[in-house]
Image (cartoon, rainbow, N blue to C red; front, side, top):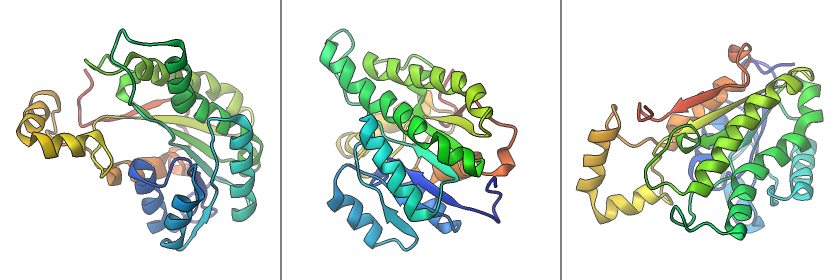
Length: 251
C-alpha cells in the first residue's frame, strides 16, 4: 500500500543521528511515522532512539553492501516492512580542487554514492512489497558548479543524480518511486555554516544577500516536509526527478 498520510508510515533514514538526517527523523515522527535510525556507531544511534518514541535502532555502515543489507533487514523486521527509505549518508569535506588522489575519489564516492546505491539495492524487494519510495538527499553541487566546492564531492553528487534518473524506470517496474533532493546551504550544529557564522557572521550574511534570493541559510526542518511529500501518495506521479531546495541559489 502506498503511504498516503493515513495508512502505513514506516521509514528508514540512513545517516540520521545528527544534522539533516535527524531533522528528517523528527519531522516524520511528528507526522506519526515509525522510523529506523541509522548510524555507524551503536552508542550514538542508541542515544537518539532512547530519546525518541517511535524509533528503532538500525546501526551499520551502508557504504558497504553487506552493511546496507544488514541495516535494511534490521529496519524492515523491526517495523514490519518499509514504505520509505531516505538515503541521507554523505559529506562534503574533501581536498581542494586539483588535489584529488585515487584514494580520496574512492572515499568520497563510497560516502556520497555507494551509500545510496547499496541501500536501494538492499531495500528494493521490501519496497516493492509496500509500493514504497526512495528519497536520496544530495546537494546542488551535483547540479551546478559551486565555486570552491570539492570536485570529488560535486562529481559524486552529479553521479547520484544520474543514478536516480536512470533507476526511475526499472524501479517503476517494481512499483517503487525514487527521487533526489538537492540541498543548498543548510545550517545545523555540526555544519560548516555553524563554524563560519561563529568566525565571521558578516561575511556569511554578505554571501547570502549576494548569492541566495531568500537571503538565509536553510535548516533541517526545511527538508523534512519535502521528504515526507515525496514519500507519500500526494507525489504519486513524481519519480526520477531532482528537487532543488536551496533558497533560489542555483542559477
